[in-house]
Length: 307
Image 1 (cartoon, rainbow, N blue to C red):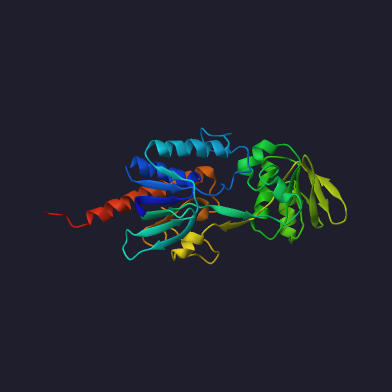
Image 2: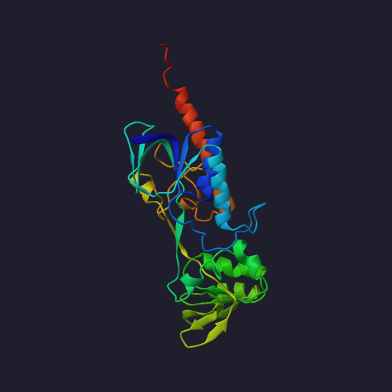
């Protein structure tokens, strides 16, 4: 038997729970399918979220889930295996790994993204601890320490090289596979960033990150290493629903998260790789308001029964 919901939220991270909170408070019947570990699970703390600075990501999600449940939202610890859009506008079928089937009038996909990390020994093991990607999330915690930055082709690397000195006067860019112009070098020098040539082969780890080892055997000390991972959206469900994507592989959404498929929204890192926790929460809120209005407008167009 299928169970009908106004909205099924796929993803129990910050964006999904934020949306579910707004929708349940709007007296919508909501289910949140929250299978899968959140992207920031390796991090002990999150920062930059007003009134929640320093809270662990797990605690934020635990409190958020309790708030959603308190307003009648259903939290389902399961994984979506397939989704289909029926012939009608209010007709989505969601299959779960457990065999359970849900039917929804609207769907919000908040499944986040995955980080494709540099293939170097030690990077995966120290990810979210002292191998980092966002100075606004972690820079203050490693302030005034020797910081490294792994070079590469990603355009975020030069940007990081220019902003990291805001947190430490000791910043080293490991050129690795990166090509540098004279203009790049001049800018980095103006910011006090040291450039070390040579390919990086591994991280030196002894309980914590101690440094970076180069192909010629040199070991350069650093307490934290910033990298620019490749962001890949967890967007299989959006593909299955036929949503439009841009040339870089990201779903195309309007400011509220509305996709090209009627009745389908996306929020958080699945559609915006730059969204931090506070931004993901805001995106979930905006999507929820838009979904509630969309449902209200649809109800206003339904024929009025005179019987």
